[in-house]
Structures are given as structure tokens and as C-alpha cells.
Length: 467
Image (cartoon, rainbow, N blue to C red; front, side):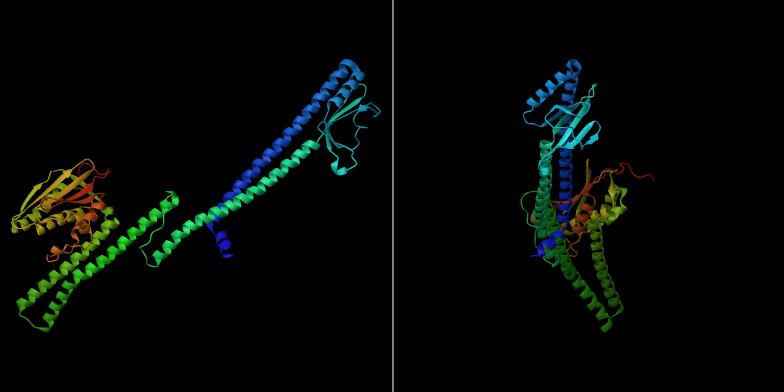
């Protein structure tokens, strides 16, 4: 039973809730205190105003009609005071009472700024009301004291004080209870996220944080966590698949290379045969190195490492050079190459990666286009992006595999018999994303139309860099 309170008091949410409750209670205390003192001040001001009015009226009567009329006026004051809250006493210059509802002038009183404060004599000392009064002395030595009983206002003040204290206590109770409930709700929802994270730490990536459907901040957090977990699972599966594909695609050439080297050691051959085997071994090693370099380039592109090497370069010249390089390979397969490359199109990005991507697209087109086929290469610039288009009339790729062929080492079954690593389109896709673009694959009826789309960066210079 003590585990929950211990967890609760160690919860940051509960502490923040208590802090918020403390600020709320302090605000309530400040407001109620202000209201209390403002009300008390207003009540005292009204009492003083009423006493001052009667003192002023008595002075006017005395000045106009003398002492006898003043006595009559005091009698009227006493008769009109149905609640018996006012105190009147008129004494002569010897201190003898002339008229009033109090026997004599008070002896024990406090005097402050023309105001007197004393206690009215009573058999029960605890019930003796405080009297706030003011006195005035007339020219003949006669003195008049007009006071007001503070029994009612003091009762009201006590009631207000009790209400303020009760309100503060109630505010503490409500905010404490509310804080406990609030922190409990938040803790339970965060606990679900922590449980999912614990399962992920344990190696289970096939989990999701449940959504409440309220579309609140926690649902937004849960949605982001689920998206992150899905991305992690995708990367882990991709890594596993990449590892399996690396093992599958590199095991054969490595074994071949090892057998060839053992054959040279164990079975002496003619110099020409040795040279042929060494040359074949070097080609095998070159293919392995190229595969590893391709993996490295894809990883760098996906991580955005290459973005630090962006420059403005003439894309038209780059594509023209790549096309000229591959024309000889195309002619060897009797494949016609057509190109439409406008001059003066500049791109801002990683020049080697974009060059390699264009080469990969043309190389794939030549590789899978049958003898006597044709390939077209085009370059186009639009308002927000540039497109490098390579189209062929080969067998093409089924639409269901457009996304799969962009994965590392993925090769369709009919491609397994041909040389390659399955990294060409993966690199092109990674380079396109690095340049805020995309790799589009479409049916060319027949064949495949591959479009490398690159975004035009706003900071890119429209003109070529100065020589």
C-alpha cells in the first residue's frame, strides 16, 4: 500500500501539479485577503461617515438653536436608532451627564486621529462590544460623544475570516486531490509508453503505443512513437535483409576467389593460366570493393553526410559526358541511344553522387534492354525541380515491385543470373532523397521509365559559378 504514494511523491508530474496547486492557493489567499481587508475598510469607512454626519448635524443644531434644541435632537437620534447600535452621551463642562443612552463619559478609551475606541460595560466581558466614537466640544464646555457599536461589523468580520480560512483549506484539499488524480492519469498514460519502450529495449519491435482517440498531446506523442518504432523496425529489417543479401551475394565471389587462389598454390599452371586466374581474381575483388563502396555511398546519402559537399555545377555537361561514355557499350549490344539534353541547366548538389546515379540508370537500361532495342535519355528543368529521365523498351518492372527494387540488394528473380549487386536503384533513391527529390518508376509500354527528380534549392545560383 505504500508503493503508490512513494511513486506518486517521486513523480515529476505530481510535483509540478503540487507547485501549480501552491500557486493557485497563494492566488486564492491573496484575493480573499484583499477582499477581506477591503470589505473591513469599507465597513469602517461607512460607520465613520454615519457618525460624522450626526456630529455635523448636532453642531448645526447647537449653533442655530442652542443647547436645549441639541438635547431634543439627541433624543430624536436615540428614538430613531431602532437597532440600538448608536451610543450618545452629552455632558457638561464638569463631566456630568445631561442626556444620552450611556450613563457616563467613558474613562478607559484609546484616542487616535479624532476617533475614540472603547469597550461598552457589560456583565459578560466576552460580549462587551467595541465602540467606535467621535467627540465634539461646544463653546460653553459641553461635550458630545457619538459612537457606534462594532458588534455587528465584528461578527461580520469574524464570519468573513472563517469563510476565508475555510476557502483556503478547501482550496488546498481540492487542489491536492485534483493534483493526485491528475498526476495519476498522466502517470498511467506515460506508464504505457514506458512499458512499450521496455519491450522495445527487450528486442520486441512489433509493439505500438495504444491511442485513446482523443487527438490530444499524448495521442500525438503515441503516434510519433509508433511512427518511430515502425521506422526502427523497418531499418532493423533492412539491416537484416542487407546482411543476408551481402552474405548471399559476396559469399559466391569470395569462395570463387579463394578456390582460384588455392588452385594456383596447389596446382602449378602455365604462366598464361596463372595470369588469367590472377586477372579473374582481381575482377572478383574489384566487384566486392565496388559493392562495399556502393553500400558506403548509400549510407552516406541516407545520413545526409554528402550535403556538406554541395556545389553548383553544369548538369547538362555531366549528362552529356555520361551518355558519351555509355554509347560504346550500347552500340556493342546494338542498342540505339537517343538523348535530349538542353544546355545551360545547372544543379546544386553533390556532383559525384548525381553523376553516379545517372550512370546507374543508364547502365541498368543498357543491361536489361534486349539487342536491337532503344534507350532515350532526357533532361528537363521546371519551376521547382529538375528531372533526369532514362527510358528503355526492355522487359520493365511490374508496378508492384517499384518500391521493392529501391531496397538494398533486392534483385528480381530474372536478374539473379546477370551481374550486379542490387544496389544501383537503392543509391539513386538515396541520392534523390538527399536532394529533396524522388526516384519515379513508370511503365514505358514496353520497358521502364526512370525519373531522377532533384529539387531546385532556393539558395542555388541560377548562373554558373565564376571561373
